[in-house]
Length: 77
Image (cartoon, rainbow, N blue to C red; front, side):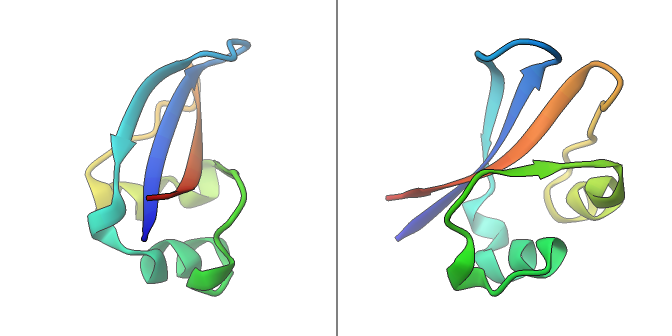
């Protein structure tokens, strides 16, 4: 089973500031967002301004890209 996490880092920091499990949204939705088939989500993907509105719609997470960097980090569960 694939676990999908949105991980937030303070800019210029390598320790996560927050981790949100977004598995319930599903790989299909995130694959579509990133332009990949869901079964190809095996890497860490930066979430940028072009993803911000859709990420908010899917997860309720508002990306504060001035202060933080966000990544979709799939993990084997």
